[in-house]
Image (cartoon, rainbow, N blue to C red; front, side, top):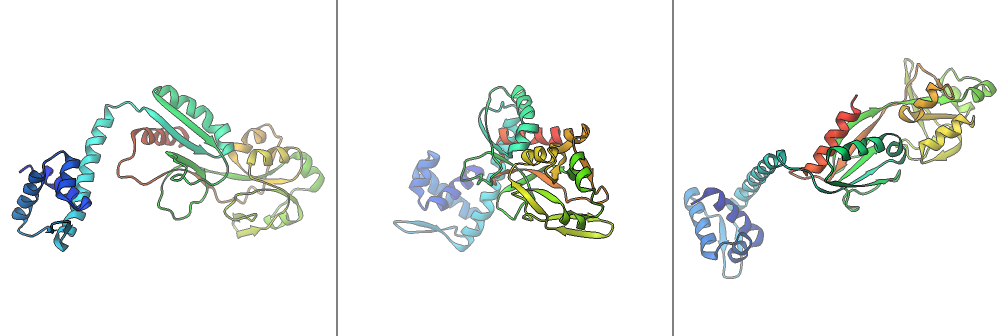
Length: 294
């Protein structure tokens, strides 16, 4: 008996509860499937299946054997696919979701370069700051800038994202420069609507952690809008550096409270759990890690 074929036959019989159905799935006759199972039982010296005229089910020993065998077969299939992928060209549709600001400022050029590497791929990119369900929405990869909650999804860290407290020179000239996080309570602030801490800002320094509930005049779910409002002198904002960087370099914004820092956020690539990650997904995530890790 081909041991591997016998194991595949055994797994299908347990899954389908029938020798005939297992045979049809594997394109084998019922008698061949039954022979495979009989030889397995003979080799192991135990009964693997309970047989009736209408149904087949695993014995206690059979169920334990099934749980081990199915993992072994999955690993073999994954190994075969991994070797095949080395010579394969990614094709088909890759569905990606990403935050709006990161997508427009950083991801757009990266996507264009990735497309040049794999011209047979089609990429459907959706930009949204709202939380999405990757499984329900049929997404291959979801990019999120957040501290993730416990989930059955798989998350791979792409890069940390630093944040800074900043304001325009005009605002600071009119309202003064805060020297301590507590002084932010006396200033007009601009807040992001989807922080995991709500509208609270956490700033840490040598004197410990400070939780600030800012008095805000603008709360919005897009950090580019916050940046633009800060540049116009509307208040103090807590912004990711990839959004504030250009304005800081041009001195349209100034960094405040440099002895304190907000906890960095993290860019994650999230995808549904699978024993073998699709080639197009793996290549895309590897590309993002290499692109942004620097």
